[in-house]
Image (cartoon, rainbow, N blue to C red):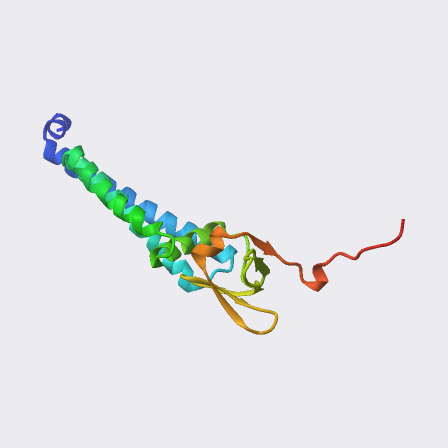
Length: 181
């Protein structure tokens, strides 16, 4: 029986395909759980968490399709040309400085690596304007700040990753300065 399976390429590809589908489902479920636990620990809104989970699912599905095509023995040259074309288009679209997609990509990066949370008082290093205030929300496109004068500032995600951001201490957090020696 084992020799028959090994000799029959179609059955072998089907078995590998089923195994790959199982791996895909496990990776997808574990990734979603990890992202949701990370979002809970960072007190991230449900909308942002859902966006990051969807982005993760699309990326995992893309990898799954690539592996599946390789298992089906579609020519590697054909798959690599197809994937390199997709990555070239995505590379231009996702890293274009002022595009909507760059803000969405920045939103995913902010989700994982931005060290500040909602409620923190921050200042963005912008020489032209006073971009400072308390972070009210971090959306898919903007970080929303409430300035000390009460104005609401929406600052694009892609720019907040490019500029320096300083966490400002609130008055109770400022250490007392002692003149004693």
